Image (cartoon, rainbow, N blue to C red; front, side, top):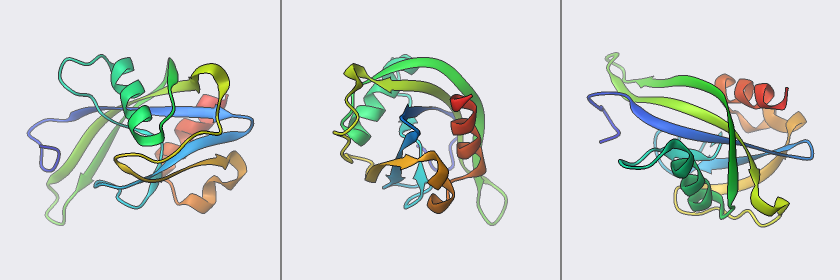
Length: 141
C-alpha cells in the first residue's frame, strides 16, 4: 500500500548522465503523475537496492544500467490537506551508466508516460523538484 502507508517505503532512483545530458522520465503514476523525475521506484521484498534499481530503470526506459555509487539519500513526503502523510518514500539515488554505453535506445515503459535525454542546461524547463535537480548536480560533481 503506497498511499497512506503505515511506514516509509524504500525507493531507489538513477542519475544516468551522458555527454552533458541526464535521462528523465515523466511519471505515469501517483505520486508526481505527469511530472518529470529520475527513473526509479519502490524496492520489492527480497530485492537488493541495486537489483531493484536495475529492474525499475529497465521497466521505465528499456535500458540496462550498471549501478554505481550512492549520490544521495532523502525523504519524499507528500501530505494531504489534513497534514497526514499520503506518501512517504525514503529514496536512495545512485549514479548509473548504461551498460555497453548505448544511450540512444531509451523508450518509456510500464510506469513512465515518456522518457528523454535532457541537456543539463534545460532542466528548468521540466519543472522538476528542487531535490531532484540537486541530486543531478551532485552526481555531476
